[in-house]
Length: 274
Image (cartoon, rainbow, N blue to C red; front, top):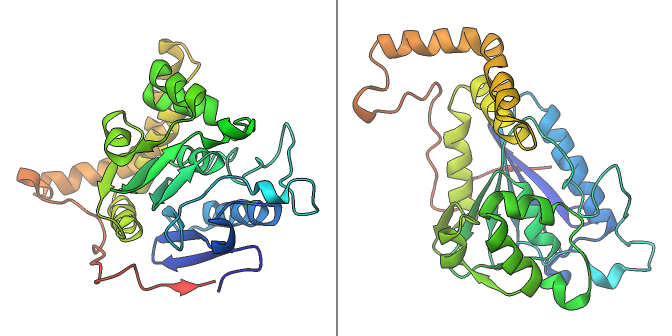
């Protein structure tokens, strides 16, 4: 069930889907919605049964950014230098991956939420961009940090300074999107990808992910030391994987999944709403 703030959570095995559902505001996020998004991802990160999350916007729009109509009201987004970001989870450093499933517009703060995610699956008619440029609203949910790291400084400056729209084809070409899928399929395809990731050995996956995230700002030597430091933490999982390989698993491109694969139905994953 969708909360009064317009956020709901659905679970299917190891995949948790966090859904923005504020159709009256094209899923723009106000203060209460930001708080619930933060709480949803905090609960996901603490849930031992959850491996991968999907962030999706219902009603054909991912997220139109912060709800400007709430500015100056009791439902305005909280803006502080520390703690939760104005959009909610944008400053969280989760231990597990999140995939953005983008339908329609992912702009301004909505783009920043998509950038916060590890991967982005977007529909062929999706639009991304720094649309807050036209309103004089700054990027303060990680946009000026994550966008250059993701697509390079020159391309990021083009998008940040102009605030222009980026269509799906360009987003894929510049690395802003990881997958482009037919209209209406972002959620299902992102959940399929999440299920694929959830079948892999989790400890090693999470350690390599965290190493890739924390290496920014480090010297090459320090970053490689952090990378090697995970070896002791994943040793048992690595030995188990090596034994499976020696036993014939994963040969000639075959899957070496460790659990029963999820087989999607004709629509989004059947799920239990919270």
